[in-house]
Amino acid sequence: MSGRKIIFEDTLAMVLAGGQGERLHPLTRDRSKPAVPFGGPYRIIDFTLSNCLNSGLRRIYVLTQYKSGSLERHIQLGWDSLFSVELGEWIYTVPPQLRIGQRWYEGTADAVFHNVYLIERERPARIVVLSGDHVYKMDYRCLIEYHLERGAVATVAAVEVPLADAHAFGVMQVDGDWRITSFTEKPAQPEPMPGREDCARVNMGVYCFETDALIEAVTADAGDPGSLHDFAHDVLPRLVGGGRVFAYPFVDENRGGQLYWRDIGTIDAYYAASMDLVAVDPVFNLYDSEWTLRTMTRQLPPAKTVFAEEWPGGRAGVVLNCLVCGGVVVSGGRVERSILAPEVRVNSFAQVSDSVLLDGVQVGRHARVRRAIVDKRAVIPPGYVIGEDLAADRARFTVSEGGIVVIPQGARLD
Image (cartoon, rainbow, N blue to C red; front, side, top):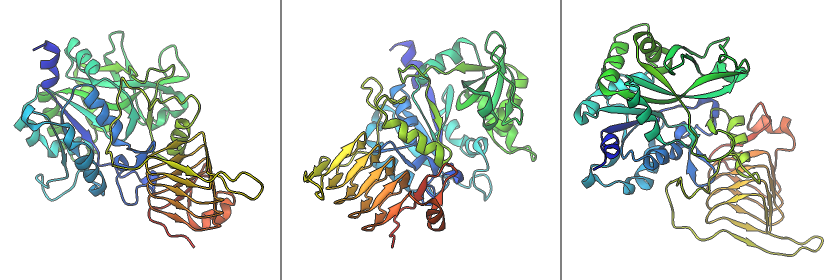
């Protein structure tokens, strides 16, 4: 057995997937942020879990909390079969157990603290702690090897962002050996990188810890009544002050010219990332056979377009510059620059443009949908118009700052 294989078999992954995602409401009205659909057939958490499998990490705890039913069902139906318990592989969802008093997880560090008993039962040499609500491609093996080479107690994956955006992240400074010398969570005035006044180096929410150091850190944090019990706000700044905490420069497995890492935390960010996927040359590549993206698969018929009556007044099933999933039927309607998730139906003379239609959405005859996100199983009645009069839309629906109309799950409009 190779040394590399031993290293990864001695590593446990803990995915923090309890995010409430308030800024993504109403997409998070009935589900947690990691369970929000993205890119057609996927959920946001699928990208982190795909990274784990592509990196050889096959012992995974997914820590859930907020409205976790949808997420737990997705993992059970879509991911359990990829692991062999007989070979020491598994993926388990872990909701709050109320083992530490009668309370829920109060922060990311607290979520791990609540589950120290699971860590002690497995006794891995190290733990990779991951956010379940980011979209990116990363080989965690490279992070782990980097961590071991430096003899680190903790390693934080880092990415460069424009200075104007850095206030939303944990900002770090490093020395010549990439040891973190300062770490500030969401500073009002972020400090730029040396020699790069327009950029800052920020925390990706991807960590590698030595197990004993992690247990000690979250236990000490749990005893601090003034703590927010958050890795970025509390645990990491304390560890940085104590020694060997390093930054790992993000190496993108997306194999493109531009680094891709997205925290899809708002409706406008979700929409922008979705529209990138339907571009002629999207930044994020869903079609890379060398970095497989996995999700729950269903037995669905092929997508279908019907009717080709192109004379004036006729109807034609037309789809241009779109992502189209299984089970979709475009029956005499026209769809442009949009994502059609599984089992969407667009009926005759309907027009859909620059939109995201999630699973099972029905668009009635002569309806028009523009710059909208329509959640699962919503029904747009015949002749209905969305996205052309934002004042009218605001009276009925959520409209983002960027003018994106969001129709909630299961809506029956009239």
